[in-house]
Image (cartoon, rainbow, N blue to C red; front, side):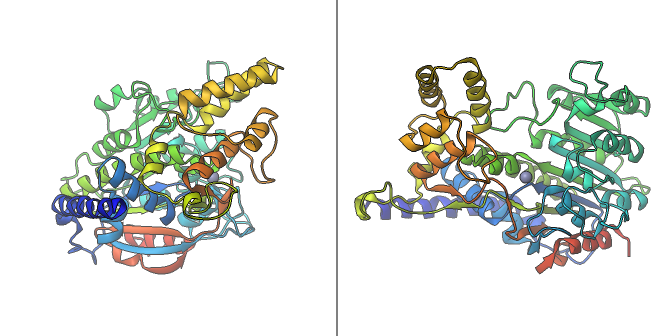
Length: 484
Ligand SMILES: [Zn+2]
């Protein structure tokens, strides 16, 4: 009775949301210009994310914050949609570098390589092609901006770890907008937070080229230049669940500023539009950590940015919006099962419902933040009793309602391993505790070869259909940019 009533209410809420959404977004979603080439292309890139994560974003957003999820409800439902294979040149399970390289240059590369083929060739990247065609270009990420995905979409390096080299190439390529984390490899190691061995200050080098440099969210509202460098952290920008809004912008804020810069003089006959790559890396990091609460908040943050892109498209209908990623992370598997190891039956049954979502919504910090603090405490004390008391207090404060079974508690306290592929500890152990109580299980702490969704809406979006290789993404995009 109760669940039927809840289902009817949910149906009504979802129908109303859908109606509102259709009213807001329908004009841009009509697909009238689907056969023409777009002037502008916005690539919204959720690292480590595919349909299972997006579907979680959709129902958690509808139920917990009463908001539609634009990725599924608009871009997938009203645009075009395809699945993409992701294996790299040397492995069935790809890393971000190889996946983004294939999507950028149209050739398979080995894991770890940035748009360099196994035989050493460097076919042009998407951003090099776009620049060559007279388009403005931009890169945004919540990761260090020299990280694998934005790097592979724009430059070339034998290894994704060649951070100085990647930043040097950014200076040469001169994207009109470059924003994210990673100031450490723009600054010499003689300065606080700097890690460059060559002593160069690349922030100053960008400024000498006419770039406005910013490093606070407030400054995003004071853009005065047509070239923008924004670095908001030494390394990664914080997860949405941990983010201090005074110190760190979210992807929507960066995207809004980037679109303002890239769309300057858009009415001029000389303006050939732009290609913008905007990445949420935290969706991948949350997958590695098996952190469902951090994933949920970052899926919402990503979707908020997709809504910014769709609103821009409404004002500028010659814009193609693509929502995609590189590979799936974590084998994300919400499921059902027994609550505990007792006999199966009605009383001992767990399935995901709004109660479980509400429990996850109460978590206050990421598992990474918890792990960093716990490991720091473990270094300070040799007393298991003291560490156990710390663990209890930390869980009570930050993960209200979470019960830690004895076997998992023992592993956390002894800093033991969980599985051979559990590289993120104790996060993965706490992730399993959360799974046992909520049904949000994970298959791994690494990547998986689950095909990736490419959803697109606007002019040119019809080329994204069926089942294709990630190298085909580059070929399709080049044609849309205007290169044969
Ligand atoms: Zn990853």
